[in-house]
Image (tube, rainbow, N blue to C red; front, side, top):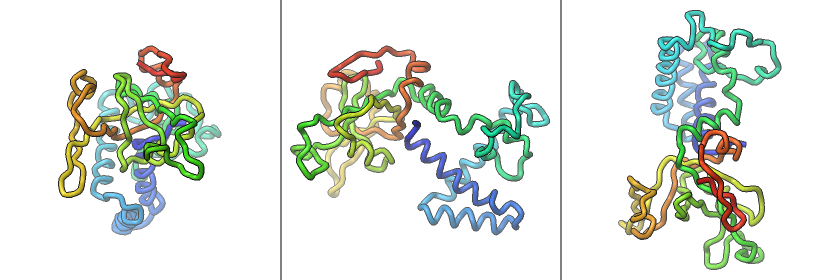
Length: 255
């Protein structure tokens, strides 16, 4: 399955955008109010979502100008798509309600989880991490935290760095509650951040411009955190990462 911060962001946009589609026959003013209500209910930034919506429209226009979409909105290579196919039953339209019905043909693969994960791998490679599960003997009875307060899983980069996930990530709880046994799990991330010192009772995080260098690997102090962590299937990594797999302590590390 594909689970991650980016996937969650897409789902949030879908919920916000659906508020307009569900009120397609209502005045524009009420549509905007409904979108704002959804943003307020789920603590989303309405203006940011409007920006995403505009970018989506620009992307559609770019597809048309590049020749990937004909004037009648037919996607090249998908002329035989059947609108009555059960595989389209749960599809939403990629574009707003004001666009043509044929637009749904453009997004007929939008709910293909494996294809989505392949896009994440292609876009974020080589930022790969492996989930390190906690040893069996580090758990106290009746406690979810390990001995010494270091319970839960960690993320291992191909450079050998042990990293944590940002507390703001939707993956933080999943990694913190990782079981001692289970399948190998891999994730892609967008950027690394290292905590440096304490200011006003809070840690400062500084983006690591060259996180894979030996200098940063060996020192610098502070914990390393990853942002926009997205778990992806091993098959996507094998097909699109172009790396090799090495076994370390019974864990398959993608290099």
